[in-house]
Image (tube, rainbow, N blue to C red; front, side):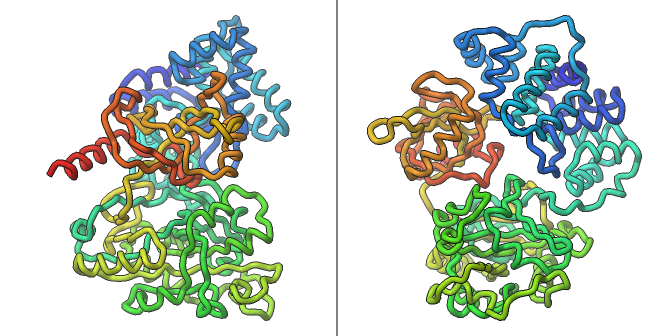
Amino acid sequence: MRRFAEACEAIAATTKKLQKIAIVAGYLNSRSVDEAAISSVFLSGKPFPAWEETTLQVGGTLLWRIVAELSAKSESDLTAAYRKTGDLGAVAAEVLPEHAGEGVSLLEVSNLFRQIASARGPAAKTALVRDLLSRATPLETKYIIKIMTGDLRIGLKESLVEDAIAQASGAPFSRVQRANMLLGDIGETFRLAVEHKLNEAKMRMFHAIGFMLASPVDSPEEGLSYFADATVEDKYDGIRAQAHVADGEVKFFSRTRDEITESFPELPDALSGLPDVILDGEIVAWQYSSELAGSPEVVDAPLSESAEAKAPNLGRARPFSILQQRLGRKKVSEKVLRSAPVAYLAFDILYARGDLLIDCPLRERAQILDKILSAPRGEHRPARGKSSPQGSLGFDEPRPTTFTAAVIRAPTFRASSPDELETLFAAAQARGNEGLMIKDLSSPYQPGKRGKSWLKMKRELATLDVVVTAVEYGHGKRVGVLSDYTFAVWNGDQLVNIGKAYSGLTDAEITEMTKWFLDHTIEDQGFRRTVEAKIVLEVAFNNMMKSNRHDSGYALRFPRIIRLRPDKSPQEADTIERVREIFERQGSATNP
């Protein structure tokens, strides 16, 4: 583990990507295959391969207490160290005493991570973590904690680790990247690369592939300026979700690649019976129309002129606030199923019947999606009762105890002029949707990439996705709850504060978030707490100004919270470049 930690220090010490890649490649080549495979996972900032559902379930508060105990330092000493470094791992390296032992091996750390993950209850986990950290050297502890918290902060993205594996093994980078995407295990990818067996990598179902992302556009003219052949869809205000179907089993994954199937227990049944597929789509709170009731569970509106005519007959999306009732629940009550029915609107297909389709153009993927969704279901289809599959969702009749839902082929439209796109935009908003998605029919599916092949057109006050870094207790009726949130955007790999807001969330949400923040406090300053940077908010504001009040150099005027964004990881929050873009656009709008 000492060699791993020293390599991380060297990686962190340079800002040059090629040098980082060279350091990682040299380190991997210096270790055994087992050590290098484990290191590849750790260097990606994770304790376990991405495809696994295993988690440590160890929070910052527990780690803080153990570091305090092992260091015998006072709370004020630890707080001072944290204020200086802003990183719990770095605090541990600074305050923990050196000892005579040789530290711990990489294989020991990996095995203990497994034991910690399987341990039940805080006492058992605390004992294992204390044992690990008490035997590790301060430098080793620094990176053990960083891996445990998923916050390596050495300027090393997983794509750079893939590049280093390619360099270490002599394999082409594209093949390494493809294998890691299919397997969801960069350690296994390393093994295949050094054994020259990357061609053996097969798609691992029930492991989320990166989602293709869209870039914002401000006008219909811009929306049609990047490519000649466009298809248009409504932009729904729901949860982006990848659906994996294999051998009758169905699982849904969010954009953060977390499994969310339990929050939507009626949806798997609507997809079971399909062949092995991976779909991309949106889970939305859905008002089923009377015309939908009694129709097949898969409702297809393929690429055609009839799509616009079909759209109103499919029902309509309901506000995101209704969908929020479903998020994060391990058990969904009958009351919630009744009050917040959902649908899955499928708009893309990434894999079908053993074939990876992401390199196919969207036009071809759309045809495959239409064909699969409209075909009769397979042998894995569970038996149904005699009642209509959608009849239980009618709003004019009592709901039975069994709830079903639909998978709907998201309607697609065509627009060849800004006026036509404007008409579609107005129709989408009239249906209660956010705006439009404009997609290049010739484009491949690019996992994790944001380019100009997919565009999103919305019109609203400027908003930012931000990460909560600190919280404060409220006043008046909010005394006793943490309701005032300081939030930040990314400047490189550092979070820089840009504002503070206290309005926008419901009392129930604030109560729930208070419990979370108390459990994930890094530093208790009395009235104020610094917290683990894991909660993403969407905030709106009237305008933006330059200011020395925050370390971002900007401040938001009248910021308010639009909503929690549990579907986004902290890494997906906006950047200082996006802040500058909004500021400059604001200036050009007010000073023509």
